[in-house]
Structures are given as C-alpha cells and as structure tokens.
Image 1 (spheres, rainbow, N blue to C red):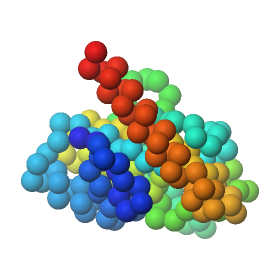
Image 2 (image 1 turned 180 degrees about the vertical axis):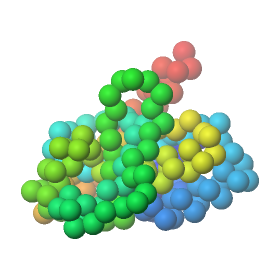
Image 3 (image 1 turned 45 degrees about the vertical axis):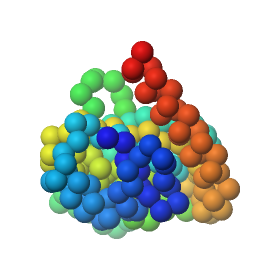
Length: 179
C-alpha cells in the first residue's frame, strides 16, 4: 500500500494518513487494525539539512525523532528515537521527523553530524506503526527546501513540482518491479 500525508500533499495513487506524527500514527494504526497491508510505502516531501539538493529524490527505510533542543543538549529522551526497516547492511539516509519544520540552518547542520540528512513530518510514525504490525516499510521523498529561514517559502514554491517528480518516480519504480 502506498500512503502519503494528505491535505495539500495528496497523490491519486496514495492513501492519505494525516499530517504530522500524531495524525499519521492514529490513522495508520486504525488502517492496520482493520485491513493490514502487506507493505507500506510512504511518499512525501522533505527538507534537506544540506547534503541533498532541491528536487533530489531520496529513498529510505530509517527514521529518527530528534527535536532541535536535543542538538544543544537542552533536552533528552528515554525513548528509542531511531527506527529502521532496513534489512541490508547498506547505509541508509536517516529521515528526521518532528511536528515542527526546522528553520535554523546553523542548528540543523548538527543533524548531519548525527548522519541525519533530511526531515519529513510523518515518516517516523509510519515506521513505528509498521514495526508494531510487522509490515515491511519504506519511504520515497522529494526535497522541496533547505532547513533555513526560507524553508516555508521554498516549500510552497517547489511543492507542486516535487509532487510531479514523486509521481513519476513511483510510476517508474512500479514499472520496474512489474516487468
């Protein structure tokens, strides 16, 4: 099953689950309880901490839930804040998820020191629910912005093209898998 956030990030080939960690976790859990999918592929936009350019397509099976306060040692968590559905030894891009969009370029560079490269609001919740229900899962993302003071304006400017690129990428991957 292919899923997405919804609202303005919808695709005709994907089932919307909600925006952010909470809506995604609630709606995806509900779906899995009543009609458990064989696999989950999340499709969405992402912000880059600097290693990826606008309109890059990034695939991942690993997510983190690290808040900005953690980067300055202003907070800690007793929870496991990294999850992976990656079953290979191949290095995976880590996608950070938070209910906030990062806009402090200097601070978010610290994510790169932790090998975290992009951010998407929903992906950690997708992987956490998939783990709970023992469902193979992954994500495909298109970079719409950098995590700086222009993050929102760049997201708005680049969002429609990113959705087109994601649609083309998913269609190509489905064709590759079925031929």
